[in-house]
Length: 133
Image 1 (cartoon, rainbow, N blue to C red):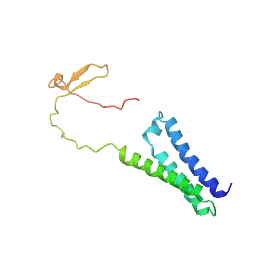
Image 2 (cartoon, one colour):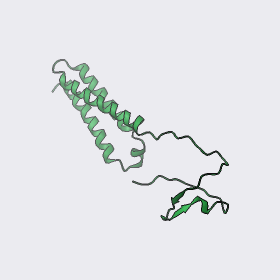
Image 3 (cartoon, rainbow, N blue to C red):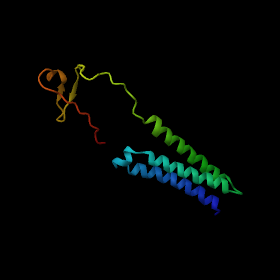
Image 4 (tube, one colour):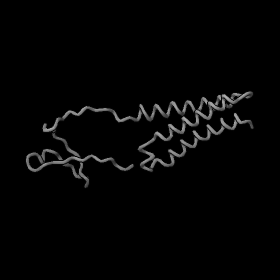
């Protein structure tokens, strides 16, 4: 096995390991909240495959195949992470001191609570927290 083939295989292994590690560690908050790690791993895999293409003298197709796969994963992972999975920017419609519209939400115990029930009686603080999934 040539050095070029080894580099191409290593690039593919790094890319597949990044996918597997992200899938297995999805429940870990730091991995779930910072998916840039797998994009960096895809970039490393692409660099290894590009090095394999540069070093190949004969039988270049394995190196080109590895470069194509890792480049596709890099582009797809970067697009998903930085474009598709972004939280959309929403403008704030309420200004400080403005009266909010009435709404009904469930409280921590699951009971429906309306803002109008508290209007004029006591101050209301609304806290939205991210659930566990």
